[in-house]
Length: 96
Image 1 (tube, rainbow, N blue to C red):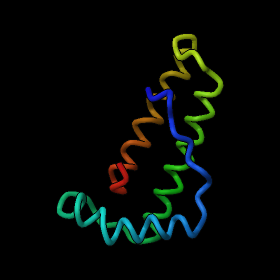
Image 2 (image 1 turned 135 degrees about the vertical axis):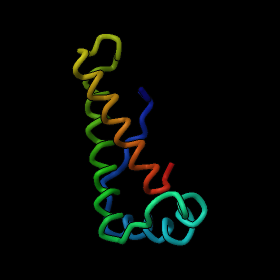
Image 3 (image 1 turned 60 degrees about the vertical axis):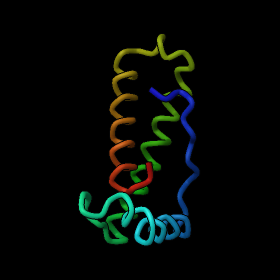
């Protein structure tokens, strides 16, 4: 678990557009072409906003449990699940 998680700011429409342009012109052709589906703007936006939501949920859990070893097992399991989902989205969007 990454306890030094960088908290992402709320995503603005402009930011999502910038991420999408970078995705289509740079990162997807270099890292995803041939191995990952190329998303439309609508699909990309939904996944990018989900990534931000997961990041905020994860940051909130980390904030509640500064000492991970003392966090309840269900919260630790949820943290791992959220990290896996977030990592998967980053991979799909060529952001990692």
